Amino acid sequence: MLTLLRKVHLFNGLSAEELELLANISQEQQFAAGDLVIEQNTTGKEVYIIGVGAIDVFVSGLDNERPIVILGDGQVFGEMALIDQGYRSASGRAGKNGCTVYQIQKDDFNALCEKHTHIGYVVMRNMAIDLAFKLRHRNLAAL
Image: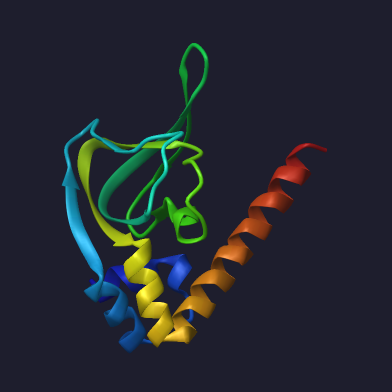
């Protein structure tokens, strides 16, 4: 599990001991090909780390689904649930070979951060860096 967590961009800057604490609050889940992992327009209190396999991320429109991206090993989705309890902006479905994910509950993450504030600082800083990158990229794409 530590090898996987070291690859997760959200956890860049955490020590092996801090990653172990995160591993302790992670719950492994397996999904068969096509299983819905998260659903757009529902609230969530979980963030997911892909251990093995892929997640097809898509948004549903009026008449169809539109794929956004395929996420793989070591990537994270649903991370905004760590910040608020807003609606999910997209859905995620297990890829063609299914997947294994590790789920972290927001309440467990918050309790961990109360005891180990450095973890919360690093994760939130990394989320802010990722958000800034995505906003810049979107703005540049609009030019």
